[in-house]
Length: 85
Image (cartoon, rainbow, N blue to C red; front, side, top):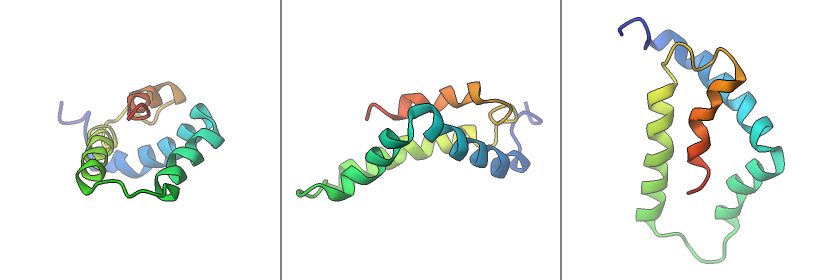
């Protein structure tokens, strides 16, 4: 298992995720998901922000060093469970 997770894969995988996520989810939906929480008139509670950040960060930390996560667009499916919250 040591060869499957390595720091040398992180930059390439993050670049792969950054390229394919907006294309697969669609650019308007991705931009709205990124911008709408900041445009809301009422403030989001800090605890909610921390929980959602932990949810997102956990997937990134888990899959960024995984060797096959950046091989093709199909492996971006690991991140689709990030969008409902």
